[in-house]
Structures are given as structure tokens and as C-alpha cells.
Figure 1 (cartoon, one colour):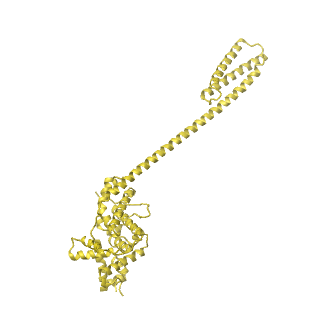
Figure 2: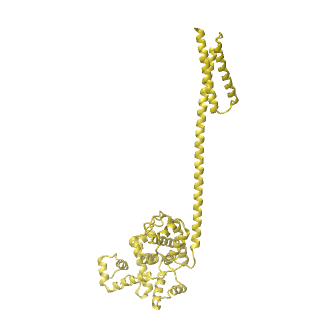
Length: 195
Length: 218
């Protein structure tokens, strides 16, 4: 019984069992067949190298250049998209912060307007007493009222539909302070007269 | 400068691109092209001059491999072109752990096997015309008359093998790939590779020595 081509190839490639290798070494016909397989492999490896009939590099180069160009465009596209996204985010954040600030300003202004109305109400209740007052006190009251009138003029210039501004807020703060001072003067005078 | 030892780890399933250590020592000398590290580094950055130099270095080995595996010179040119398009596309993924030649050879082999799969609708065995046989014989002008005839006979016989038998014969016996590696590249089993190799040798035996038959040693 001789070795099959499978077995002979295993022997040739050094992957056969010891038994198959021993048979190939002792059987002249299998040894000859094994040698034939070795010669074929050697002859195959000696086949001459071949070259293509035409130069394919220009085609490869064109494809490579096109690919590079495409990558550049893709990179530019991504950069543009990133810049647009960044701009949108910055503008969004900035808009959000500004909206929050405006809301805060409006809230504080509304609080000052309410405080101002409350003080005016208190002032009207104190002004009901028409008794005589000192000339110095009357002068102080007159000065405060003039300053309040001046502030009212300035507030009137900004108009009823304007958005709350820092200037308006300051005017309302000053008005509240003046009204508060006026209430104190009136309250002190009333108390003194009461004595 | 020392030859580059460059490894590949590409995710593309068509290629499991790593070079085998023992395998490379058995590989054809034609693929043992020395490539310096600087050239590879430039090629990785997309330097077209460096890529062209790589192309010029590997053009003939890749074409020869493709020519042995595929059916026609036109198919081999397609494989050569596709191989270098792949090299241009993927060389930046090299990590420097294997040989550039081993990687290019494997890409070429994979592309050639894909070409064969794509062409599988055609008849499995090519009928060689006298013209083709003459052209094979004419490619051996330097050899002695006897040797030229023998080599031409062998080349003609190899060309008459089925696509799969011819591919396995070349990849195993000449390029030094193991049956496991051939199976991985071809999407088949190692047993398939072994059986194709045995069939190839049996067929060659029958073609080169008609009286001896194709069967195993009897």
C-alpha cells in the first residue's frame, strides 16, 4: 500500500506522521513521487517574474489624489459644521444669559414700582393733617418733592412700552429712597405735632 | 536604512492583515523588497512620491502573484490596481509590527481570490489555445531548450487547473501560506485547501505525464 498524494504532501511539508515518513523513506515508488512533488514546487518557485503591459500608476495616483481631495473637503465640511455649531451654542448661551438678566431687571423694577406705590399710599394718609409746620421742614419736603417730580419726568421719557433697563431701575431705586425719606419727614412732623 | 517592519491591523473583514513570522521566511524572494522606514512614514502621510516608489518596488511581485492566481493578464492588472488602491487607502493604519511586503502580498492575494470569486460564473477550467501555449513557451528564452519545454509544460499545465486548485497550489507551494491562512483568505475550510492542493498535484501529474494517470501513488 502506497501513500496518497495527501500523505506525500504532508511528508514533503514536514507535517506527516512518523509512520508515513518512514514509508516514504523506504518505498522507492513513494520516494520517487515525493521527489516529483518537491521538483514541481521548486519549478513553480522558479517561474519568471512578470510585468504588466501598461503602467497603472497614473490610474492609482489619480484615484489617490481624488481621495485626498475628498478627504480635504470632508475635513473642511466638518470644520465648518463645528464652527457653525460653536457659533450657535455661543449665541444661544449669550441670548439665554441676556434673557435671564432682563428678567431679573424687570422683576427688580416691578418690586420697586410696588414699593413706590406703597410709600405713596402711606404718604397720602400722612398728608391729610393740614396743620402748620416749621418753615425748615416745609423746605425739606419741598426739595424732596421737586426731586421726585424730576425723576418722574425722566421715567416718563422712557415711555410705557420700553423694556426694563438699568437706568430705569436706578431711577426707581432713587424714587423709592426719596419717598421713604418723605414719609419719614411727614411721620416725624405728625408725631411732633401730636405731642 | 533598515527594512521596515510594519504591522497592519485593519478592521476590514476581507483581509486579516497580519504577517506570519515563519510564513515569511518561506515566502518568495520576489516579495522581499527592502523598504526603508522613512519611505513608509512618508507614504503613511499620503506623500504621492513615496507611494509611487512603493508602487514601483512592488509592481512586478504583485502582478506576478496576480497573474498566477487569476485567469487573464487583464484580471491581473485589475488586481494590481485594486491592491495599490487598497495600499493607498489603508497604509496610514500601519502600526509598525510586521513587514510591509507581507501585508501587500496578502492584500494582493485577497484581491486575486475576490476576483476569482467574482469570475466564478465562468467555466472552471480554461481551455488553452495554441496561441497561449506558444506565448507561455516564448516567455522562457533564457533556459536551455529542454528546460524551457519542461517549464512551459508546467506553466501550461498550471494554467489548465481549476481556479481554486491553481490558487491554492500557488499560495501554498510558492507563497508559503498555510492551509489555515489560505482558508481564512478564501473564506473556506483548511480541509478544502488541503483537498484542492492534492487535486492540483494529481491533475498536474496527469497533465505532465499522461501515462501515469492522476491518482495517488499506486
